[in-house]
Image (tube, rainbow, N blue to C red; front, side, top):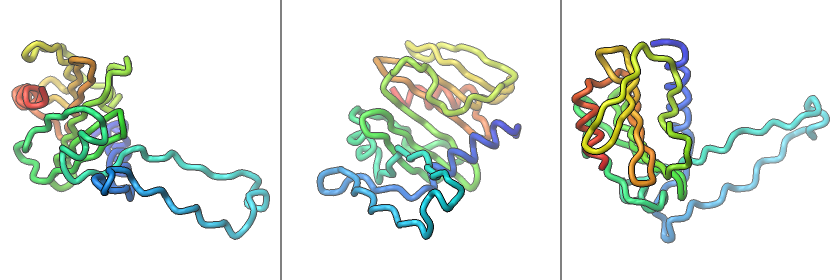
Length: 183
């Protein structure tokens, strides 16, 4: 696994493991964060700078339905991906829904987001030996991989962007099956 791919995996696992509010409360809204704890010293005495982190916009959801409700659009996530026994759903309010299929350290991520013109919502911007465009149903899917396995697949349809990101790679046939399952 190249360094860029490891970084992307570490980043996605870090984001997925971060403590998040659960979907589906009485009104579907996440509880506000409590006020931050006061530091022992003012910022000026800590070297003169304040540290800030990037807020994680993803909210853990119990079901695909909950993720769809938070994202604001319907989603079709496959019931399973062969070889991956666990599922986890997340969403960004009004923007994106995703499902992680995992088994140990490997995962497959399926995403759907409102088309904002970016074209690639995979989160994986690594360089791959092959990049091909195939037609699946009525959409053109860009697949990135090593010639034998596909690690990233992206496409657009009906005002939405889609992505599949597979840590260990999937065959072109498996990618095609997942693409069909999302439509």
